[in-house]
Amino acid sequence: MTTLGNGTDPANATVAPGGAATMADAFTFQTGSGTDAITAVTVTLAPGTSAGVSLVEITNDAGSDRLRVDQRSVQRHARDPADDPYHRDDDEHADKIRVTPKSHIAMPVPPGASYALTASVSSWTGTNVQAGSDSGGTTITIDNLSPGNVTGATTTAGDQQITVAWTNPADSDLEQVVVLRRAGVPGRHVADRRRELFRRRHHWRVHRGVRRHGAGDKLHG
Amino acid sequence: MTGWTTARSYHYKLFARDTNRNYATGVVPTGSPVTPTVTTLGDGTPVSNATIAPGGAATMADAFAFQTGSGTDSHHRHHRDPGVGHVGRRVPR
Image 1 (cartoon, each protein chain N blue to C red):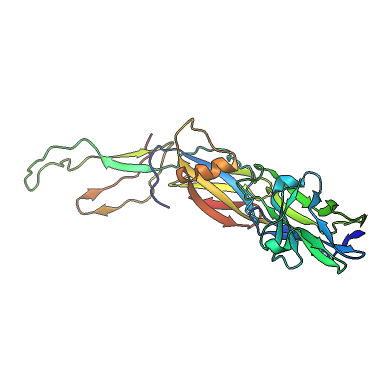
Image 2 (spheres, helix red, strand yellow; image 1 turned 135 degrees about the horizontal axis):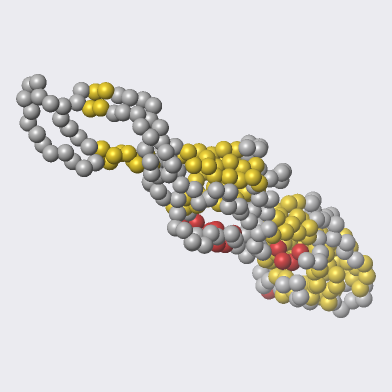
């Protein structure tokens, strides 16, 4: 018999798009006696969260050896051919599930979403009778949720200056407000998507980044 | 900041960004595009060169023009340097 169990789950964490590969779960396999050749493992992610993930891997406990996972099948990462297939014996072996968030550009466009990702082993293919389960006790939050827009934004012409004023959104993780300015070409499209923003950035002048100061920030051009 | 161009409008858009570098969809502020008020000094129609005698008549020595990008501009300071005179005036567009 081969028994699946919870390992010592890693701590909850929040990662940004483009962030590092992060451990999302720990699990163990243990046979009653002898060894079991496990040829496939199915990892299940919390519903809807795969949209924020570029890679899922199964690693050893230290993260130094890995299996490649595409959410449907597992293939041995041929780091050590002598260790193929995935043998598990009567010593308890701890393994982990590691996820890598997508890059910003690969993520859904603003306003995006925040993904509360949990991952667990839901089934596997081996030769022994199977028992046990993996609960997936770690939550990895992939923060691809845009902050709110500024409100009350106005521009006012002055004597050789333009005053831009606005009220910051209430988001606790607000870092700054980026003001883009472009010399007027009436009727030209104004980009409103992030990809457009980056693609067109060279056409705009990043006027100034302003740290959070609260309501009524003013920027004189 | 200097370098405004007379009669040129400027488009603005504001994007909030969080610590994970997520951007908001962005907002075009009310009033954008906006044209800063710039008053430009330029040459007027040149007056002819002339030679005058001591005790001669008052003679036009230069022509200049002010133009605002929009609205009006008020000049409050008067300077009188030898040979140069400025007067306070309202300048139509």
